Image (tube, rainbow, N blue to C red; front, side, top):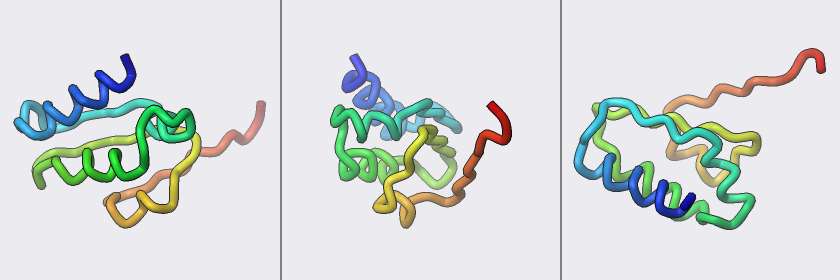
Length: 79
């Protein structure tokens, strides 16, 4: 199902069906080997200039950094 979600996101980005797409916890799919870094990079590259894509997750693979416009890191101050 997770792989289907990524494929659906690719379709949405390719057709320009939205102006913003949030892929919550997609970075974790790389760690779980559901998708590769290369697949996520290819997904990011499909988007148009007008589309904003937000990727969330706990671990950011350094290979993704050149393909991202902005990076925000949130850290826990108190558990």
